Image 1 (cartoon, rainbow, N blue to C red):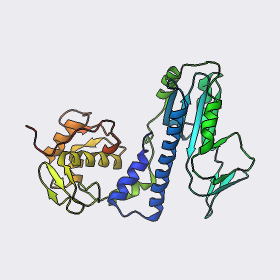
Image 2: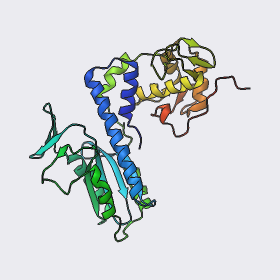
Image 3: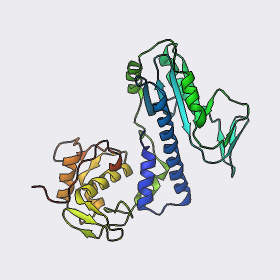
Image 4: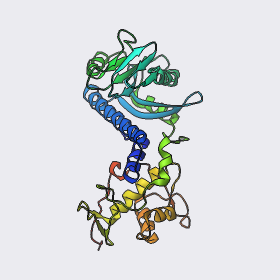
Length: 314
């Protein structure tokens, strides 16, 4: 389960800007959404067979809109579609709308999963599609009454639901259906402009300490030391981390060496930026242009983080 691009962007901006309360609430909402999806994934992993396929955070083109689906589980006898919610305030359902505190309203809470059904159903050829909203709050704070009972699950109901739907007549290959489905997806950021992008021009430049987010003052060629919180970081790691964060702030563009050098500041030589890009990032142009693939992921979330050293390589 990956952190969304928007959540990563909001974290970076929170480290480099003085965000307003509205944007901080957006960040909190993204964090809680990730925790809910992570908790659901843990339940799922413990309950389903290994040969089932689980696909998460997929984005599709719908009818004049983008459709993001949280979790698709492909079993041999059916396909499950789950939309994960992790609300932390109390809601009551009335006349098709969830009503929360401070005039919060969620119109048609099942609209997103309904759009997901429209995407998947034509591909299934009669294979059953079972869809549910899943509310992952640890407390019983989402109140539907007797309405929509077959359309949602609460956290403590997920295990029993999966157990009751483990078996059925084999109708498809999970791997082959996943191979048919994945080419229809689009990148989650394609054509999307996040509301928080307005903060990017205000973001503090330079290589910052990953703990206190102040600019390093004790710098050498091979290591940086933060005088505020007394941590030491490889200079190469600090630069790779900063390049990744710069890429997320400019997620609609590739990485360009001269732009990164300008963002890092005069203490970081262009030659060092170029050498680091060549070592850790994939070039997508001829050598004279120095343009690289934007990984769209913070260094912390790389599948394999390189071993960075403090001392010069011999």
